[in-house]
Length: 330
Image (cartoon, rainbow, N blue to C red; front, side, top):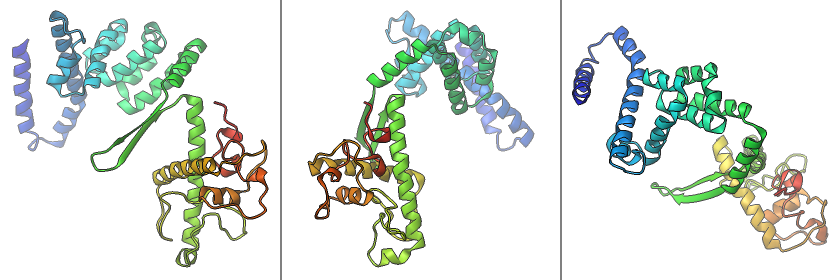
């Protein structure tokens, strides 16, 4: 077998040397074969690592050996080894990988779908396997997730929700460029609430940026309050927050506004806790008053105690309530 691989490598080296002189038609035909070539190489190295690990009792299925020799990360190597073993229960997918029609990345998605439902459900759905052959990895990942949602039983979905809830987390680490990186995972209900709050506040930032562009003289005159508008009503419930645009011409991107929204909401929550006041349930804090508290300013004289701090921290009107509709549902 080794001699065949060595010969194939020699042919590939010759083909690489001839790329510049090849016609466009030859290059297109080569590209059409590249997927088959890549899939078969992945399958060859995965099977080789798995067999050696089994014979030598490595105990990791070959993930360590595969990572060492292929340059894959340990997690990707483990995924490929696991996929190679699980494909035996999905014959059509196994044949597709062997023929170079399905990449191991898409095959891993098929194996995951089989774990979420059953190997038989995947095997007897030619449409899903057909998509694995034709779609790129990112598009097939979305298609496979939709398929899983449609084919999972209610008990399976409930168990998955409990797992996601149990495994929720937020993690920070320092990037090599000096930035602070963050990653989190939530169950669907909590994640939807967080997204709603961030998008709502990001929209307020977008409106603030638009007002800055329309009224640059306010910036020049020192009036940089997002709560100010032509009608005298609050256009933003807690101001621009951290990272707000610093000039009338600066427009934040959607991603920048989402990042600023997170900073703003956390600052607002901290201000609410620092206020140390109680509130009556169901009483909304006026947006202008919310902005004052978020900025750490004292409320105006005569402000009733019931509106100094919104229920549970920040009200729905501020865009940062502890839950949808201003109530935290856990």
